[in-house]
Length: 157
Image (cartoon, rainbow, N blue to C red; front, side, top):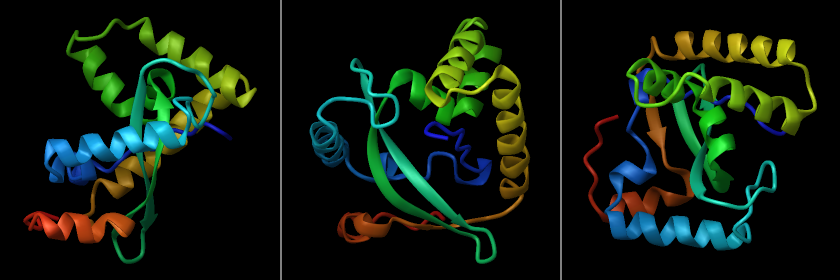
């Protein structure tokens, strides 16, 4: 699938590149990423408001969460990738419940699948999230490790 739900374990929420770098450094990085992707969503090709999405890979045996890259993604693709955050926003009343229908339609269109396949994918992603959220993870910032170290970011992970 081109677009997947990538739920970050609850134990590593807010332990990401955007949060550990000074705002001006993150702004430089994300703007370079947008330009690299020609201000188009790397997943669906849409224009519009972009987000700099951190792509993580998980070594479930050694509990290492590694940043494998950054990509420009539209709001819809970004929300789908972080569907857990969307559900929190909806349950807090910050976003309308109808947003779930819009995001489901977007997922179905981008991946050319059925709603049933979306629901199965969401269920599997949620199962993986629950298991990973039981663990403490070591964060590896990959290519950005030296930049993180430059700012002497305290290792809270």
